[in-house]
Image (tube, rainbow, N blue to C red):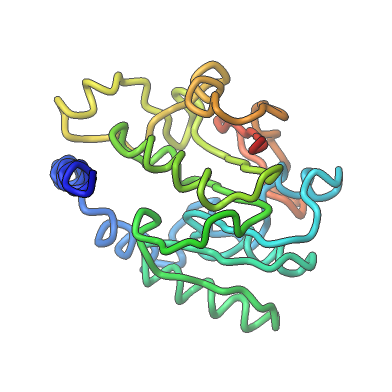
Amino acid sequence: MGRLITEQEDLLRVLDSLLREPKFFWDDFYRDRKREVPFFTVKPDENLVEYVERNIFKQGNVLELGCGPGRNAIYLANKGFSVDAVDISKETIQWASERAKKENIDVNFICQNIFELNIQEDSYDIVYDSGCFHHIAPHRRMSYIQLIQRALKSGGYFAITCFSPNGEYGGATISDEEVYRSLSLKGGLGYDETKLRAVFKDFKEVEIRPMKEITASAETLGLAGFMTAVFQKT
């Protein structure tokens, strides 16, 4: 069994190597903090705020995957959640840490590949992902699902915000086969309601909907071209 697991891990690493190295790409991406990217805002996702206000998300332990500059993690911590926020880029973790310190908010920011996290089983009430999953290659989807299953307590919630197909900011509609033919995710894969339901079929569906488009003057971030979903571990 141990040998089989090692061989599977070796195969995953070989497939990883076919695509761009994420650490260097995201460090370069976040190095320019004045880049005109809506996700660089300090505003939390509109759907995340709704989950908290509707009491779907109750205070507890949160793991955020691909936290970026920390906007959602800081929001949750400010609402009384205990937050571990992970990103592969040291540049964005530094930025997020500076933001949290400025607001006197306590968040445990972790600079690491999410697939290398050492997580205690059943230790989180919530796993949140805004913008990470659509950059996950097809061969890593099962690893991603296993990570969520391992992290969440029974009855815990997993929520995601990701590209919808052919959105303004991304959402490639290529097949899994084409990912490896072109050796590219084309900036991020698009997922509609049917695909999200299929990928996360082992979880109980709570809600799947498009992200609401919110005006720039509002206190939350909402953009067209994204899907949002909440699932529960049963």
